[in-house]
Length: 152
Image (cartoon, rainbow, N blue to C red; front, side, top):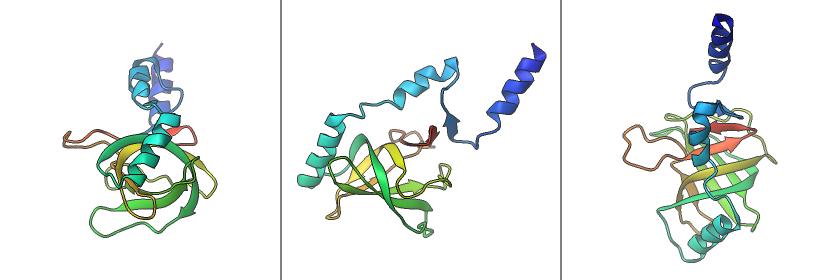
């Protein structure tokens, strides 16, 4: 029993803080449900409608393919930046706060990524941010999922 607990503790330490692997332990299955927030055709429609209607400040889940990696924004809060294309063809800049959440070091062009965060309109397709936990608990927590890991 003690050996099993030690092995479990070592395994849990293999991921950086803010990164969880799948499948999650039973006690974390409720948390996992939050990561499956309606990523569907409805999500893509909400994103398309938000762009068409020039709307911002919307919590949206979705998925896409990485089409371009950008340099990190190191001014003020640091952000990992990359552009994705959704199944509808809309492009989206993802600005992932790496002061508050782990950077996705393995990300490359062509990778699939799922997201949940706040959408801000711009003429290029929009920006997705708040893809992390809010340490002050004043904003809905967001996340990114890449290669079976959740970053928040």
